[in-house]
Image (cartoon, rainbow, N blue to C red; front, side, top):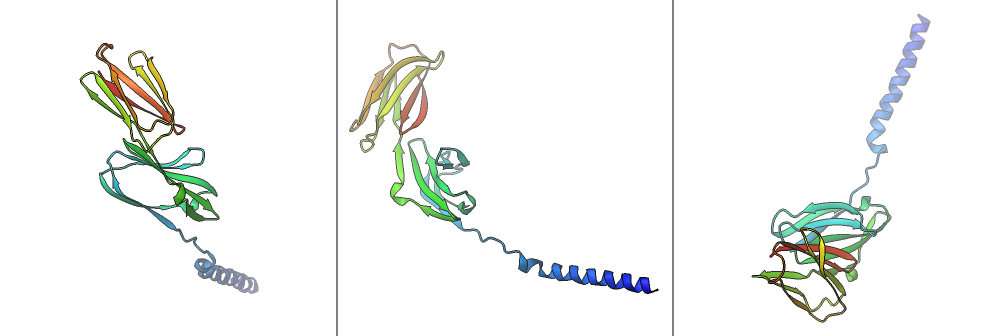
Length: 196
């Protein structure tokens, strides 16, 4: 009988201890408050690509914009490791870069370093190709034209600090088919295909 009383007291003591820990649980665990950063654009085009990249260009997040108009979305950037990052919004005509830094779970945007890269614009009329880039972007650009069927390089040009890039290419005596224009500027490469 004494053993039963002793065992009952031990079980009762353990039960009381466990209940004490169970009641203290929520007060002992403190949840980290998330700081949501709201990213907004007044006007975006459907099909534009939004991404978050690190300083090495590694894509950490990517989404395709579903509809034209205003865009707004919240991001918890405080979970990122300390370092430099940037939002990139790429549309058919331009790339908008919005750099920010994460340090000790604090996010700081570098507004003075926000940058817009304008892509060259191609128009095809009959067998003439018009290439242009806005006059306020004077960064050097390499232009290469390939015949898509066999990837032959047709033309390669480099433009240095042009006040306004405007070129006309006559394809009337060229082989019919698809051509790919490849542009390299600002450490980036992009392409556009056309049919003649």
